[in-house]
Image 1 (tube, rainbow, N blue to C red):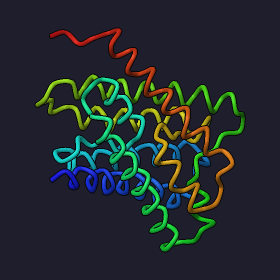
Image 2: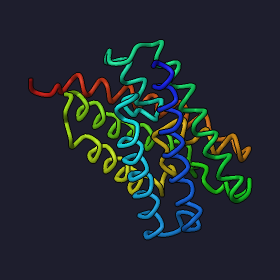
Image 3: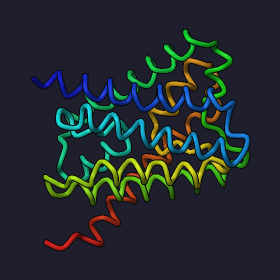
Image 4: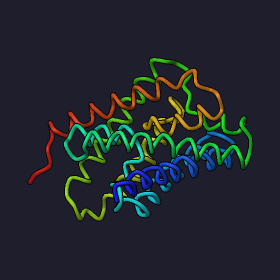
Length: 214
């Protein structure tokens, strides 16, 4: 059923944002190297869990930037993309509401992605999203790539480890949308909506520039 694809995207994004947010709260925020490592691994493993649980249903985008790249590459129709985007943002919002129910609105505010310098936030989000989405496009090109889930999950963990001190690491508009809207801290949200999408476009361009061997 078509609706199952959208439900899978909602639930997969929920898993990603919920587990990642709970890890941030569990370690008290990204205040040091150990905390950054825990948070990075949590997001990577959460994505891996979502892929294993739901990837066979929707392709496990769980990220509007990934969906945009898949549309540009002709793997996802624009009609499906609209449904995916709605589901992804909804899943992230529900995840943050559950986090708030388990803690508080202020605690959800502690899971919001944020930068200290605008230019750094923009640059880092474009670069990290480009790397992440480029890997997704490459490892999912051929069906039956059993290493794809691990490659994607590890890449997400890696970009978090690299980027948290500089931009908070979003690389996913939905991941930033849920906590920002639920906590009411939306002043920086536009950066995390716009520039991961730019990174998705750049990733697709690089993927086409360096095609995999047939």
